[in-house]
Length: 109
Image (spheres, rainbow, N blue to C red):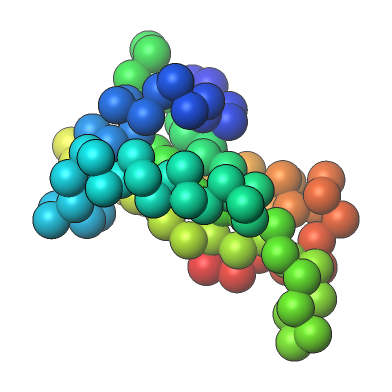
């Protein structure tokens, strides 16, 4: 198992899993939205098993008066046919660690 940030060159891989979360989105629209979100430093994080994307989270570090510096999780999904509870747990633990390394006060799902 490998957990890592996903590069923009891997958008087709991400689209394969994100289309389960948003079934009415086309690849073109998905790609446009990902590029539009770059201004907020939107990061794509994935869990890979044997080179296959199993779980995905789209996140950004944000600061607001209410929540202070925090990691905002916009999208999170585990691919069908995989153990949701296992991979969701791994992803949430990773995001907690990621937020601490970025000096965030919390993770907001």
